[in-house]
Length: 398
Image (cartoon, rainbow, N blue to C red; front, side, top):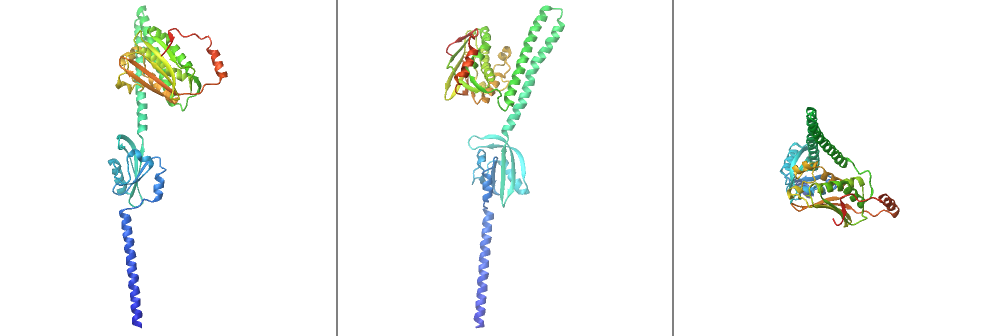
């Protein structure tokens, strides 16, 4: 009997020991599997879904485990290796040091349309074997900063020309004080340079105001008829002097929401450009129509046209397709840039069609607005009553 009891006790001990060994082995295997193929905690996956910046979680080998919805532009796909060598290098540093690493990098992003972007990337180790990489794209900030620097440089350069000319002409007048004919000639040239300086300063201020203001101040219901009329009247004398026919036409009684003064200046800039680049005896047309919920104001000329290579840059500040002609006509290179920003501030766009030797058409598109009530329109009609068309302008089909 004691022998049987002892045997039973030994058997129980052997069974317990075997069970312990099996449990320990299973735990060791599970731990090994977890280390070899760790699972991403659900909390981290939830955080990725709400991040604004691109965020990627990789394992130790650089394989993408998860990516935030905002990281699609990086081209990171779960289950595939991280493409960008620069990000892989940052990931390795974070894994080796065990600390957060941050760098400003230029990387290629996207799978189809590959483009270089400037980013601020940060990598940090999380959990067991995971690396979290966040990427913030600052390419647009860099572009805007470069635009500001270019604007300052170009403005300084453009202002030097008339300011320097005025200074030289002032000296010339002083030296030619005994020659009335020369004094008269220098005075006229000085006046022309002063006028050019004034125009340049005014346009720089207008462009800065359009870019800096959060919103347009004097907003209201604007009749496109009035905008076109005012813009054309302002340039009728110039058109007549250039021996051009200035023609208007198209739909009437169309309205938009906007700043009347800014819209008149925008259309006026297009009319002024069309006159400056058109040969004598040709026609400049301003046409209006409604299409797809928008009002279109098209300014067409039969001038020299714009080369295809220049069309992509024609709306840039201080850009001139024809430098020599622009200088002769007193162009500042800011008119089309002002038009673009003014129309964009109204929720619209500017389109361009041009062929060298055939002419150009600039089309402004603005959201169509409902007509005002009759009482308001009646008051406006009384103000316009008796107003005669400006000399040199014709009514017709633009």
